[in-house]
Amino acid sequence: MKKKMKKLLFIAAVFGIVACAAPKTDGYTIEGTVTGDSLTTGKVYLTNFSRTEAIKDTADLVDGKFVFEGKVVTPETYAISIDGKKGRIQLFLDNSQIKIEASVEELGKAVVTGGVTNDLVVALKKQKDEVVAKFGLDSLMKEYYKKETTEERKKEISTIYDSYQKEVKVLDSTFLATNPNSFYSLTQFNQNVEDYPIPDMEAKIAGFKALPEFTGNRFLTELEAAIVTLKGLEPGMQAPEFTLNDPSGNPVSLSSIYSQNKITMIDFWAGWCGPCRNFNPTLTGIYKQFNKAGFGIIGVSLDKDAELWNKAIKEDKLTWTQVSDLQYWDCAPAKLYHVRYIPQNIFIDQSGKIVKRKVSEEEMVPFLKEYLGVK
Image (cartoon, rainbow, N blue to C red):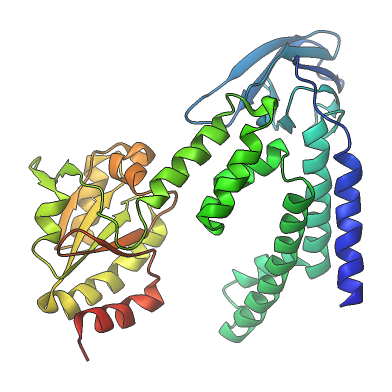
């Protein structure tokens, strides 16, 4: 126990030392130097990874050097790429003075210094890389997927992987505790909002909003919206209504489905989703087992290709009602129900009240037996 505490204190000290500095508020400057015999001039691109607010800037590479200047309202992960060259330089961009030294042959191994938040992220990644090396995870994962690997050995590897995940979770928890108001912490709270009680998230939001550097931050806006949505999805709340077209183009409302059943499952899935398709045979069996007892399903597809969607319905023999707006991750009901991965489900009673969300494959049959009173 003492050793574990010493380790946590050491990790906290590492992060705390880096966290002493504060990002600038008047903008960023990125000065890059790229070495390599095959490159002296060209175009350099700076891009983020956001689907909702895509940002791209271009600079000239002159004699192996480039400069980007600007100001970010929402600090986040960006990539720097060079026209016609493989690989990219990745960094967490805040309003800091940043220097980059890279080789054109290995852009992914560039040295990035001076970025206040990026230094925090690099320190965290280094800690995680050490855990990966400690458990020999790279070789274990390759072994796991080999055809000759036995089920017994796969279980052993899974146990090792669980231990790895626990150590990584400690690192993440230590980082967030030591840097509760860093820009990177906000991205993690936003990404994993459902891992925390709603009151805790509301307190964290209040902390961010009290700091001027978070004014207008997209992730803070998204986090606030997520909390509003999640409050409306708690058991006992009325399920948000929606109406979408079925494969024949006929509009179908959610209420027209749940009013016919004792309990209805909204199944968020897609024809392109491997785990969804793998689960469908099990789900069809569960549907046959409990349908006569009052269990219904409405499938909401996050497809964007109608042909693929219809093909998947036919191939997987899905006999319950299916709807979609073919908007992929912009699917309207998916946003209403805070769906960030699929397959995912939510169960609703006959009056439209939410019963339970995210019921796992292992929990589903016992849950339905208890709710429907089936032995």
